[in-house]
Image (cartoon, rainbow, N blue to C red; front, side):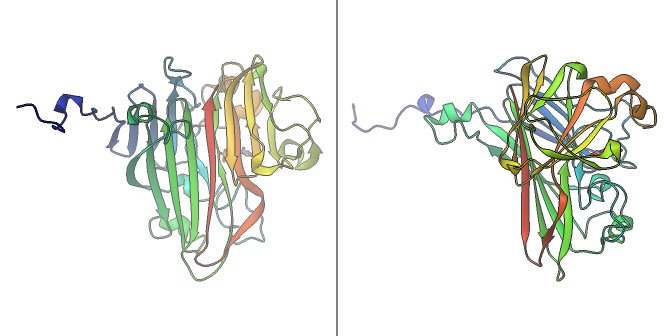
Amino acid sequence: MDRRNKPSALAATPALPPQARVDLVGDRVTAVLPSGESVDILLTGATVLSWKGAVNGGEPAERLWLSEGAVLDGSKAVRGGIPVVFPVFGQSPADKATSKLPQHGLARTSRWEFLGKSTSESEATAGAGSSSAAASSNGVQLDFGLSAASADPALKALWPYDFALLYRVTLEPGSLATSVVVTNEGDKAFDFQVLLHTYLRVDDITKVGVDGLAGAPYSDKVEGFKQKVQAATGLVDITSETDRVYVPAQGAAQPLTVLEGGAPRYGVKRDNLSDVVVWNPWADKTKSIGDFAPKDGYKNMLCVEPGSVSSWTTLEPGEAYEGAQAITLL
Ligand code: BG6
């Protein structure tokens, strides 16, 4: 019998789009997209160790620099990848509540909890067109948590505030985004700084330039925190030890581009992270960094670190703050 409105054949039902594969093995979370692009995260510090990303559907390649001497057993902060710096950047001033904490705070050496995964859709395709078109660009979000209750007790004792951190790592074709939400769950206000200490992989540091910082004031840590202003035009070149805290007038609204040999490689967008640290230890300083290997590895990395570090953010009880970066392959 020929029925009108008969159910459409099962075969016409759209197949589930290919999904990311996510595995938690030991103290590592790995996610692989159908494109082969991947991310690898260590529970120590929720440190992204590896991001293999592809440009325009090409072959995935490593985009982060990780020292061959990095200690990955949780006993030390990871040298490379993307450590999370909280609640203090660098050595704490003696008059702040963070004064007893080690350099860069407590988050990067604490063991975080993996809270789970969800799917993500890139802005470019979300809600646009057919479900399969959107699905083809599906990515994955991985959530990690750290709180006063779960942080390393020895470190927590040095900074007695009831904080909670939610860190989300979003992998999509051609991009990696990381965001951190800081919540004050206690009954007293606290001040904090936060920074995403991203070690970008480059082929040859002498050919690298950073666009987006022209005219920006900065503190030059190599020259005792001397206050300087970046030239009004051109790129930031890296030709010697570089350790600068840029405070661009446009704040987080200013996008950054990392170029190599004049060609754009990475686009960095920031949300609520108004400062940018640019760090490369160069040949001499590298010799004094025990876990930095190989010693000429400085030629293959540049830290471009979105942060909120030139001042302090105060969180009242119950308040939350969110800061984020999105790195796109160009
Ligand atoms: C950068 C700082 O963010 O991190 C540098 O500006 C510091 O001063 C660098 O040397 C690495 O820090 P650490 O603690 O990982 O050796």
